[in-house]
Image 1 (cartoon, helix red, strand yellow):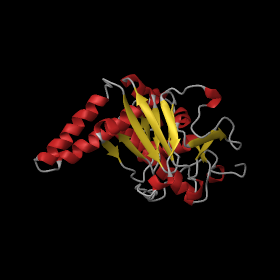
Image 2: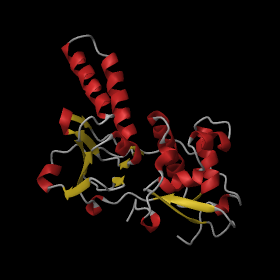
Image 3: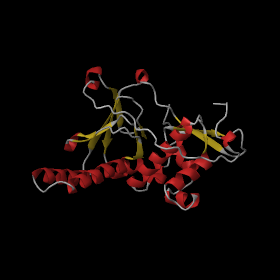
Image 4: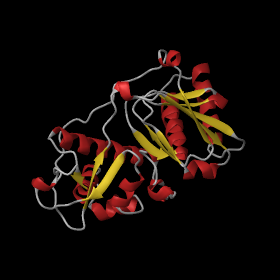
Length: 261
């Protein structure tokens, strides 16, 4: 199943302990690099060359500085991503290549609701959530919702909430003083408190595509979303990559893709 750990072992998500802004930049840039090369006809890309391209696009001096920022190797980082598949490169000994799983067609969607029971802040740090382009995240305890925005996002649950808190705070700062701004700031305070999990609460993730995933699945229940509920959901178009970004393979462009996929 997409998103499962190999051999059933738990993944170490320590590489995700970077700022939520930087993690968003990494995932967005990876999508842009991959989509631009896929438009050029490549499905499988070399891991190392793609890491170089992503680090350059993000403004790092070199791959070493980039890997310092993500607390490990680029190859190990890709292993954490449930929407990425890796395999040995048959053209270059000792090297790996990867692809991003293609989006399922609408008729293949499996509308799913995930309910995460949060009991402590450590759980938020140790749980990774792949939020699909079509997915919303709700916290009924404070009547808060992050709507689907057409972008894929992968991070710890802690950083997902931190990102929502940051974005809401930015929005409040741009508003005129008044009751509405006060209510938004109050919600920010509530979100901030939930990061410490002073009492159990639920995070409800609704994904009409069913692409989203959470690891580990401890304290997570799933159920199918009823067809009548789907009619009222906001389902955006996925955002696509802009301009092409070059990836230089170790053996030249002939090694970017091959026929064994």
